[in-house]
Image 1 (cartoon, rainbow, N blue to C red):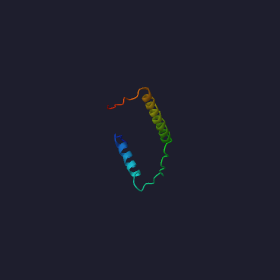
Image 2: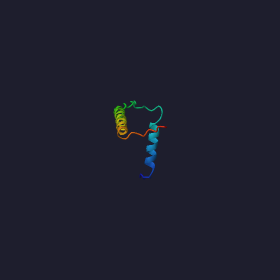
Image 3: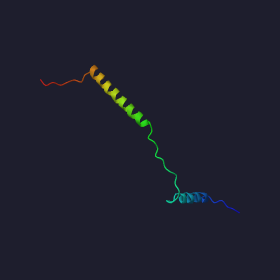
Image 4: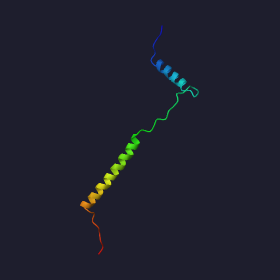
Length: 72
């Protein structure tokens, strides 16, 4: 007769996982993931946003120039 004891399955799973993680165990070849295209897109988007912000600052200066203090 087999009795189910809670935790035996967890112990067996942990044991088999530990045995499969041994240093001499066969390993799947690891392929380095390719860098996502989002990096290039993010760089272009950042450049466009910086250029837009710079242009808006120039327009704001034309509309309301910063006061210049002149001694005299």
